[in-house]
Length: 156
Image 1 (spheres, rainbow, N blue to C red):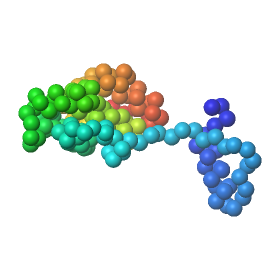
Image 2: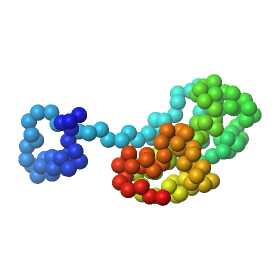
Image 3: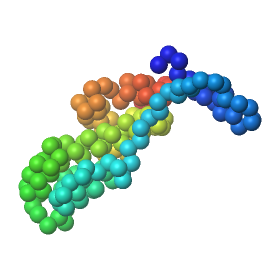
Image 4: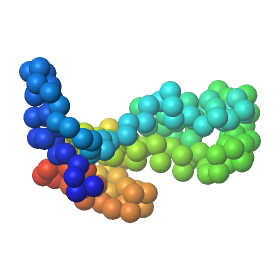
């Protein structure tokens, strides 16, 4: 809203309150901050133990292949894929890519890492492959996303 406080306004208000002075009368609107998804709250409520395990593995910070995500499960890769698709509505590879792009979004918004470093940290072979996958998933480029997220200047 137009009457929401900006960062400097919020800081001034907090300084005022910490100095023991009274808050101004009336409602104080604060701009919304980013929502951080945590691993503990990001898992779907699914009954299938195989699907839960694949989701748990997918949410880790290390980029995985589908083979890595299903390794050691008590079912075949094909069975895990079918069960996953039935429970989640997308394939394991799609979920792994979605999670990697989500991690990339966090890095782009919260760090000044270069696009190449973000690509490497999120498991893409090249910055070009990362850019293609990012655009497909987020409908924007990594650089444009960073600028929109307010990280100031874009880095390559």
